[in-house]
Length: 141
Image (cartoon, rainbow, N blue to C red; front, side, top):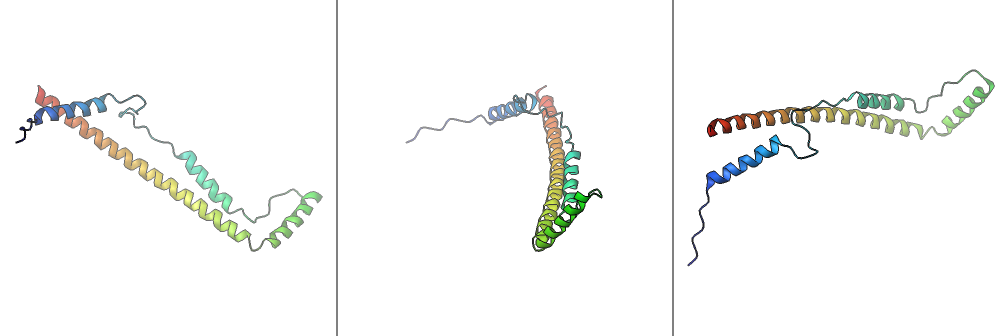
């Protein structure tokens, strides 16, 4: 015969779990962000970088601007010669850069959407935790 199993006090276990959750949410560990300070991320610089990448993608194979000097004219002749020699290669580079710029833009947009989703989810979780804490305090009083 085996020994009877000890009884588990479910109420005591639930109290301990509540206390652990409360301690973790009210006193966050060092280095954890304060739950009340869900600060917004400034996406401006990343958006500008994506726009700059798109603008630069259109410059492949274009003649650089140059002053009207003898040296600039000679350089222009040389650049046109190189462009003609690379007729098969330049479109591939331009396509790659345009695809990269498009991918960068889509990644920035996706990160902005994810940031908003995380912000809304965190706010709803914190609101629910506050509600549960109010309920717990109401029952213990």
